[in-house]
Amino acid sequence: MENTDRQIMNPETFAGLGGGKVAYVRSLKSDQAKSLFPGLPPVAPDLQLWALLGADGTPIMLADNREAVVMNAHENDLEMVSTH
Image 1 (cartoon, rainbow, N blue to C red):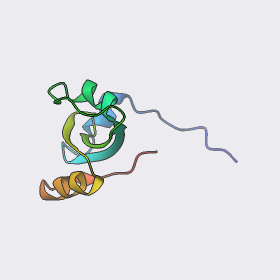
Image 2: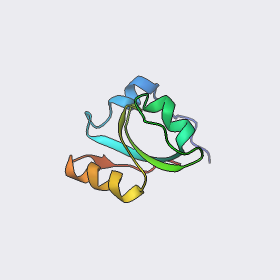
Image 3: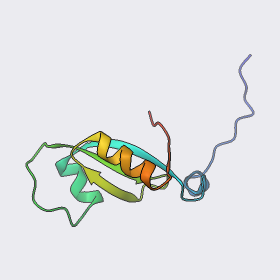
């Protein structure tokens, strides 16, 4: 039997989860990164980058490898969550 008593969280409620201590890693191309990180210096087009973002989507860090953003999250006591 399917559960039909689901409640949908609005984006503001979802973003507030974790009290600023929840972040996620996102893979993106350099042209996508420019919209999240406006101060990004010129980089090669289609360069694979990794961003660390707060639960509300706030950009925290950008790097050219995933390990660097994961390490930054751990150093700043951020709880990493998976996105699909």
